[in-house]
Length: 116
Length: 116
Image (cartoon, rainbow over all chains, first blue to last red; front, side):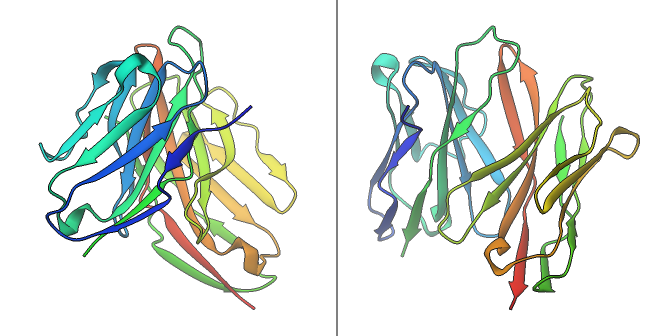
């Protein structure tokens, strides 16, 4: 079974440009999460989808970040316009449907974003 | 609110030395999970272990061992006879069930450098 995949693995852009990160969760997983780690800090929660709906977006830093999950399958995270402080590693994770006693989150390999 | 503290920012050891990475957590829930992840230089998050709050048994897996103590809210990780390949950033994390899904809080990570 394929794991969580993320594309691209690495992106280098200039300040002010737009970047779109993509995450493909494990097939059948309703829950999809975005996290990011900026240099030297903790991995922080950004938001959580249940199918196509945003369940919790309390971690989104500002309105330059837009996440979508049309059709409840893959998700995109767009940063527009990118700023220097957006550099970091963006992780995606997915887990099975709600209602189970324990829903393990499976993490993707991450996208390393560098804003110059 | 949940919180994970990894007080050690960076540790350097000489190969074959033992090293312990500390993790202290805070939570108001009686049911929670604790994790350790490894992030090698390649960037992906590698799952190492999960522990639930009702199981305080220590665990050993090869050169890795974990000491979970609820009395001190700690979940420390020891690598015995360290190797250069152990060089990575290690994250401790805490997860609480919330509305059918798990909200994961990570520590800031401990960067381990094993010197040959």
